Length: 480
Ligand code: NAD
Image 1 (cartoon, helix red, strand yellow):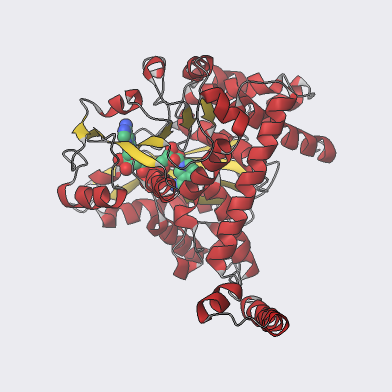
Image 2 (tube, rainbow, N blue to C red):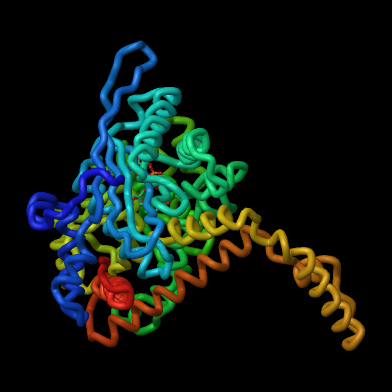
């Protein structure tokens, strides 16, 4: 049985802010679709909202009450899917907004899940590892009790403040209580040894890079911005050097873009000559801060990162970072939304009026859920990608290579032969599936933007999602 069914739409709409921002974007796009108001409302509402409190015993013996949420936004496809966030800023509004974004994100990139999100209102630095494990396991137990987790029901993943370790604890707790042959598929983003998948950790950042690359390859769009095509040579800054921000920056720099600014909790740095990402990570590890790094200049405030000269701004920390207060100062021509909801809807309009290209979160950070989908498929199939075909492919490629050698008279070097006959391993397949999905989704969104003569990709992305979900509801009808 689900807890607390949410049917009071109007109350939720007027009370919550981030969720309201998401719904504003939805409403803007809905005008371009043919669905009636009732169906649009059904797509928009959060289907179930679970609020839980539970006690844990701290290392010093004190009892503390912990507060958490799990929101399943849409059951139009099952299971629902969405990360679990640990942050002192977590609340019901944020969790509902993030769950709704997950629904639209999955639809945009054709991942067959409904959207969900979970959150626990804690700052991880206030707890020991042992306490974090207790909190994670107890939260999982509460989700199990209320039917908010399971391979066919609702499948969490990492988000801000959580990672593979927490996902491993969730799986272990689920497995202790459920005799389920598909148990490993109850959560994604797990350690490889526990049914995780190669490439999940870097997936969101990798997808961010693929999305930016797609945008930068569109000649007309770059000409409008006064930029050349391609990622190579472009300057960028990143806010948040966590999982998503670090990996996005890594792939951007590998593709020849120049990292010129970084913001973290402790402050921000700027260096127009470029910042060496790996050296910066080591420096932060050693000193606990990015400030004072190499030849870079420390900015007065972390949020000053938004004002520096660059081509691309990558917000990769949290929501509502680009607001009325700083949107006018942003010089970047491309805003690549790696975080969820980093731009308020008013700030979006300010940036758009200035002619900036905003690559929206609902598309750009979908890499995580795309690869989570591959992980879930792997877990319910109980077989590693590449296991059945790698060796077979390699021997077929070898036969072809030998045939080419005998026809052409050319002898391949060992290195050439190794490259030509390489059979796909799990990472190769995951990366290829992620790239394919990000490219296709970008082209779909662009086509919708051009078809409706829109000047922004966010509305186009929402139209794409609403159309896909709306058609599904029409085909299956409303039960009973
Ligand atoms: P993370 O916890 O690994 O990293 C976030 C980083 O941002 C941390 O290093 C933190 O110190 C920094 N930060 C926080 N507030 C900041 C501020 N005001 N200024 C500068 N830095 C700040 O989290 P993550 O998994 O990288 O998630 C980042 C964003 O990406 C979130 O919005 C999350 O919802 C979104 N996202 C994550 C995934 C994923 O797979 N992890 C998938 C999709 C979307």
